[in-house]
Image 1 (cartoon, rainbow, N blue to C red):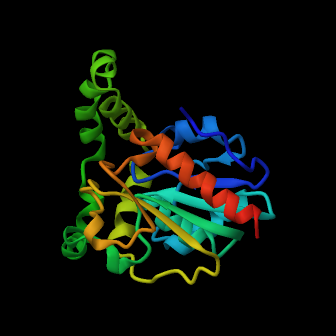
Image 2 (cartoon, rainbow, N blue to C red):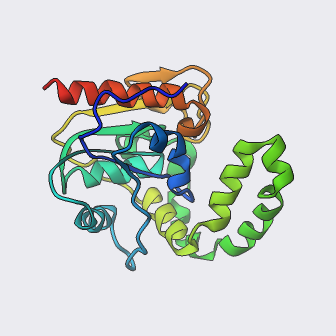
Length: 228
């Protein structure tokens, strides 16, 4: 059962993760009518996360809002909070600073120059067998992720991966940051983070696998924001 929001007036902006789109927030879009999930903009060559976040901010309506995101989208949301009137930042299966990147990501930093050579189109072709109706019936979660990766923009994917590997500065966010994380997140393992709330049995894509917990957490933050 999806929780009814306590506040439907405060704009809520959530950014999807690497190789994902607004479909990852489908349960939240049902529960929160004020939710806006901006599409990933085509990045400029060598554009920093902060410069990119500023361009996203220019596409949003002015005024107080709550921003957030899943995974890489949460990282961008931290930078976005510096360019909008953010009342709070919500991180869903994400991290607050470069120091919380897992060991494998930090070890891969010297290989960032190889990112342009990743055969994204070929990998998307490999994902097609998973994005079929048969898989949808028996494994809807895998089907959804495969569809998002299949439809993702290779240019955006490469830029996002490069920025993740060279992310080095923690944004100076002036509003509260709320962090929800799954204890079975193998992409951004819990042991490297310090979330405010942990979802038992939750993996990396909490918004789809544990929508009730995510919606309740967003409700809690909306309530805190409303009662200021």
